[in-house]
Length: 156
Image 1 (cartoon, rainbow, N blue to C red):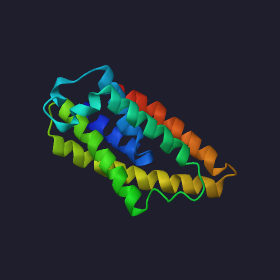
Image 2 (cartoon, rainbow, N blue to C red):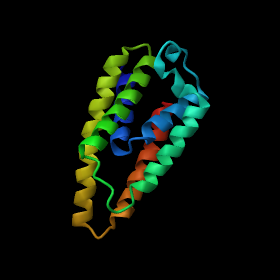
Image 3 (cartoon, helix red, strand yellow):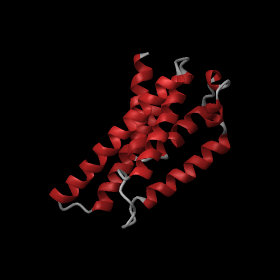
Image 4 (spheres, helix red, strand yellow):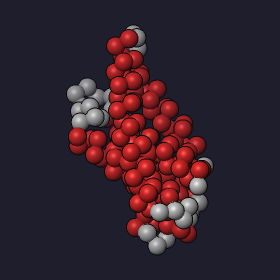
C-alpha cells in the first residue's frame, strides 16, 4: 500500500511538471509489463503499444513547446485542469494495477499534480529571477528531472 501511494504521488507530481510525460512513461512501462488488474477498467488501453507510442509523441511535443516564448503559464486554468486530469489518470492506473480503489488513486494523483504544478512553476520563476540561467535551460533541466525520475517511478 505504501509503495502504491508513493508511486502515485510521484507520477502525479510528474504530471504537474509535464502533463503528458507521466501518462506516456506509465503507458510505456505498462506496455512492457502488462498488468491483469487493469483488464477490467477503461485504463487497460494504457497497456496498448499504440497508445504508448502516441502518448510518447505528444509528450515529446510538449517538451519542445515548453521552451517557446509566449506559451501560457502552467498555472492558468486550462493547463492546470489538464495537469490535474493527467495526474488523476496516472494515479487511478497505479491504484487499479495494485488492486486498490481507482477513485482514491485518481484523487491522490490529481492533488499531487496540482501541488507540483504550482511548486514547479514558482521554483522555475524564482530560479530565473535569482540566477543568470536562461529560462529554456532551466526548462531543459526540469525535463531531465521529469524523464529521469519518471522512468524510475513508472517502472517501480
